[in-house]
Image (tube, rainbow, N blue to C red; front, side, top):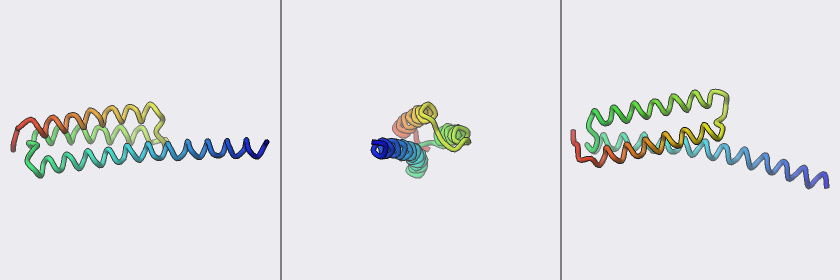
Length: 104
């Protein structure tokens, strides 16, 4: 009984660590994806200089917040949720500005 309980606890801890790493990676992937979308918008002319500047400022703000939040070595649930909300908002801004028919 002790062995099965011990293995169950170990498995639970391992799954928590894996899921935390996966969530952190998904934020990192979203940050990379948003950066690539901004750069593609600039290269294609879908974003004006002013639009690109605004998006890059918003992007830098998210990166700074992520660095502050992860200063203790991990992101808790609320911190991940906050970053995901900000990334959602950035994605909406990118989509809107890329498709608003303004050109350089």
